[in-house]
Image 1 (tube, rainbow, N blue to C red):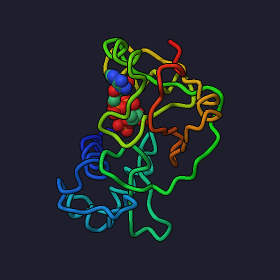
Image 2 (tube, rainbow, N blue to C red):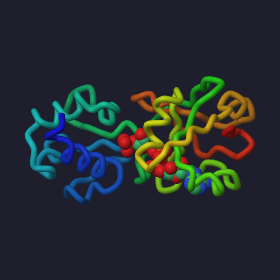
Image 3 (cartoon, protein in one colour):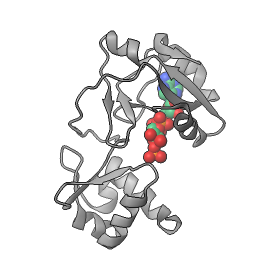
Length: 173
Ligand code: HQG
């Protein structure tokens, strides 16, 4: 929904990073009250439902009773999404840009401002993530080996894989 793009970006900011920007709070699992969010953002519930349903990355979900909403991933505020550790596929992918490579080669993938490093299930999705910042570079992550070595992986409701860091030894360019 092109006309809701700005609103959707603002909702992502509110539900992941700055709930105070809409004058609301998140509970410790990241849930916000739907009515409070609508008031804070200045939209109707119907518009919010449209934004959630048409979001191309399925960024948000309603609670089963429809009174609460949260972002599926991407948080910088500390929230417990109650995700269970899962066995990842052998390979996952990370989209980035060339200027970060020297640092990534040294430090591996770090979560930066977010709670987790975000990994994609396929190279095409990773390329899209990288393209947000310029010419995309897709890194291969040996997730299966990482998992066998004791690293935890989680999968957000929208299919994005999450882990706390990826040491350089598990990365291939
Ligand atoms: C880079 C979007 C230097 C990393 C996407 C990335 C995703 C390093 C940036 C989600 C580094 C962090 C997350 C290191 C990592 N040295 N740079 N050691 N380790 N980086 O936005 O993965 O559209 O926090 O490569 O689709 O880009 O917002 O992470 O470029 O799912 O819904 O540091 O956000 O979704 O950037 O994106 P981000 P990301 P939305």
